[in-house]
Length: 261
Length: 321
Image (cartoon, rainbow over all chains, first blue to last red; front, top):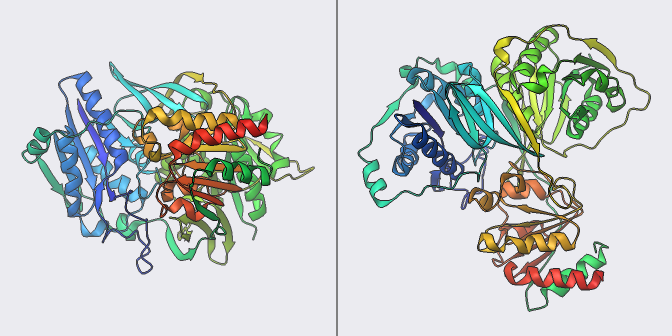
């Protein structure tokens, strides 16, 4: 079985402030440290666990981004992914979610994927539209918000999180599965894994390699346009105090004053 | 020319989901609102949608939409959009509707804007407001011909009543193809949690990394219990596996707008603030005086949530007694 996991390099959510560049109207990705999306670590862990249950399979990470995104794929390899593919091309800058889905789907089609893992959404753009877009480009089902994943014969069966509980859902393969964050314990790279990652196969692809028309992706292909960037309304400043041992009294007083008790 | 705005109305156990009705009310303010409702109970529901703003309802009363996820709705909507070409299709951001929106935008080559908090029609089409980070709101448009798809942020709009309005009903008679019946629902289990639902609660107490370890989360639950509220969590501790996704408050989890929100040991990542900034009163407890959460707090306590939470719980119980 060929199992894929789609991953993304993002500005470190612990340090970045998700700033927009007023000139390009894009997310600022310079001057901030870039990391493998923390949500993807959980997704990669889910993919590794599944791979270990089905046997005789290969797990491949695929990403789209600048050449520097190889760092993120290297971490995936260190965690236990077998090989990695990075699609990088200057014409991809400014791609929207559907442009990204188009590119990733082209790689997956070329490779012949049986099962594709994605995080529910990235930790920078947050649209959550890429997995469904990939599934539609490939004409295959998508099983979303999975907290448990099993392969039963030629079917994928997942338990998915829903607002009021959970749901068991099945579909044919190939399929795209999105993983609900926090459902799978993260696998941390070992020293051996980190050393071994450097020897694992890594390949780069361009739009030409995938036969994609540059007009369909990047800023040229985006179906949405940012017109203006305005300021959000700020909340009025509150009272900030140091805990001097009376914090509980202060909080209870606040609750009483606004009739919240 | 009046703009025609479509809203896909989601059903849960045969009743329309509130978030869809809120979006329908917004659509009715923007132009002529038309609803699409799909599912076994669609016919019964359709008759009630006029009072929420719909002037017309496209109805397909077929259980296939309840038994199979995403694809039947995408197939039907895709052909309806091609035939009628409304200016926009609005969907509330829910688990199932976002799956539908993603596929539909690819199938119909339609622009797709997510996390909208406001919409308006200008001379050159639909303008959509999308909050970005803590500081900005961007205005986005669909620059091309054809229907623009917009997913709206939960609780962005209130419920509107259009007394006496009766919607024209149009039955859809096509049947869903076999190819669209592949994501099959085997069973649905409702998990009843104690206390109020996180999204409906008037008090929410949430915890983050500052709690130190998963075993301390009960301190959050204890205070939530004492205040008759619901416990919530940050994405960081959900990603770390402390709690299931259902607890997550934030842009990608649940959007909450309670009367009182207490953030305990939460630094205030933008993605978290996006999900709770609309709360009426916010109390924040954090060790780091520079934590961004203090910028939205009405009362901020610089201190250790692990020490302070149990004292607050005790004090609340004492004053309530």
